Image (cartoon, rainbow, N blue to C red; front, side, top):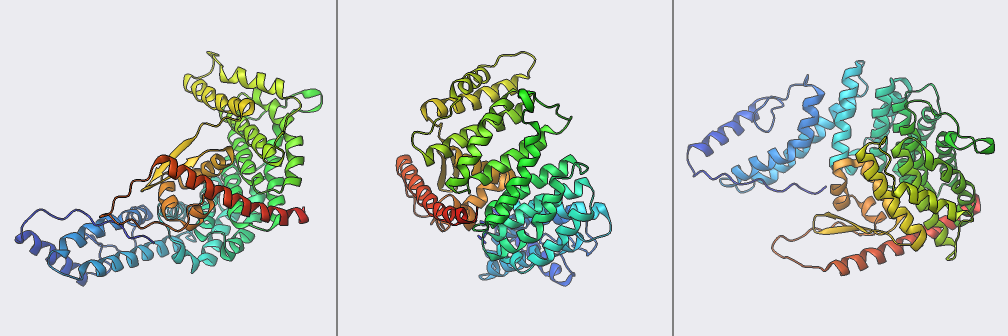
Length: 454
C-alpha cells in the first residue's frame, strides 16, 4: 500500500513548541490505546469515530512525523508503522462490530468499512480475513433489514475488487453470489437492497468469474429478469411500472451491460438480436435515468456488434435514429430542466455513434497519468467502478493492480518528485489505446473458452 505524503513541517523554532510535542508523545506512550494526537482510543469507541480514524490516520500521522523528524532521525519510520498498526486495529474492530447484536452498531461498522475500502488499497490486510468478513456479510444479507442488506451488498462489491481477480476473489464470489441473486429477484425484498445487490452482483461477477461461464450466465439471467419486466408485451403494449422501481431497473440494466462485455461473439449475436428491438421500445420510459441507461446500452450493443462484424447493421435503424433524434432535441417543459439537458447531451453522443461511429473522448486524470475513455465498453467499465468507489476511484486507478490491469496501465508508478517528465497528450492516448487493445485481444481468448461452455 502506498505511503501517505509527509505533512507540512512546523514553522516554529527549536523551542518550547517542540518540547510540548515531545511531552505529548511520551505521555501518549504511557496511556493505553492512545490516539495519534493524544486522544484516548478506548475500547468502547463508537463506529463513527472508527470511520473517521481509519480515513484520517494517514494525514495526522504524517503531520506528527514531520514535527518529530526535526529532532529524531528514525521517528518517521516508527510513526508510519504505528499508524498502520492502529489502522488495522480499527478495521478489525469494525469487522467484529458487523456481528454485533445492535443494528445501529452493525450499520455504523458497514459504513466504516465502505469508506475505508473505497478510499484505500487494503488487499494484504483483507486476504488474511476474507473468510471471516465474507461470513459476516453473508449473515447481514440473510438476516438484516433492507438498509443493512443494501450496505452489506456495497461492501461485498468493494471486497471483491480489493481481493482482485485471483482465486481468493473467486472463492468469495462463490459464497456471496447465491444470496445476492436471491435478494435481487425477490419481489418482497427492499427496493434499495435489490438495487444494491444488482450493482454488487454485476461488479463481483465481472472481476471474479474470469473463466467461469456458468456463474456469468446465471448472473446475466438474474439481472435480465429484473429489467426485462418493463419490455413491451404482446402487440407492443408497454406494462405499467410500479412506483419506485425505475432505479432498480436502471441498476440491473447497467450491471447486465457490464457483464455482456465478457460474453463470446456467438452469445453476443443472440443477445443483440433479442434485446435491441425491446430496448428501443423502452426509450419512451417516463424515468430519465432509465432512458439514459437504455440509450447507453443500445450504443454499447452497437459497438459490440461492430466488433464482431465490421458492416453490422440493425434492420430497424431508421426508426431507432428517429427516436434518438427526438430525445436529443427534447424540449418538453413538463420535464425538469437539468433532466432535459442531461438527456440531450447523452443522446446526441449515442446518435453520433450509431450514425457516424463518432465517440466523444473523455479524459480522467489521476496523479501523473490519465485514462482516456474512447469507446462505450470502456465507459461502461469505468462508470461501474466509479459507482462502487465513488470519490476514491482515482486513488484506485493509481494504485489498485486490478484496475490498472483492466485499463492497461501496468504496474503502479512511483514518481520521483525531483524529476518532471512531460508526456504529450497524443503519446499518452496512443499508449493507453494500444494497451487497451492488447488487453481486449487477451480477453477475447478467454471469451473463446467460455463459448465452448455456452
